[in-house]
Image 1 (cartoon, rainbow, N blue to C red):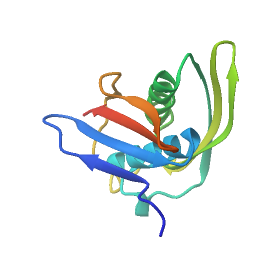
Image 2: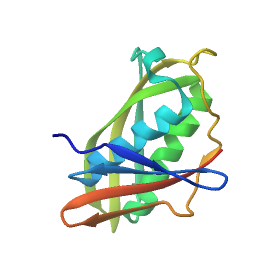
Image 3: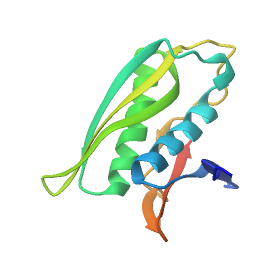
Image 4: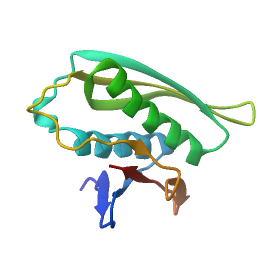
Length: 142
């Protein structure tokens, strides 16, 4: 049985969820998937366009915030709804972490949109490993 990729939690005003994985990369990819499912109906999103994501951060918490924030910014700047995000390279470097990945999606469609995510917050967003499994917890400002 495949473990659940992500889980949403009740939150007063915003959206709180966790992405899970055997590695940080997998947990971040699943956290990205939860973000995409919050923003759009993924059944209506194709994978016709690709966007490269490159980020550096001093720790995993900040890296998760920067990558997910970049995905939100790319959605706005390029007018895209994303369906997938794949980490292609993660390297410990210069006292932090360098990450490269590819997001795939298609042009925004009014019929596919669900919620407008304003930002990925630093509040409550963190990445951690426990008993050999990774979690990326995210709080979205909507």
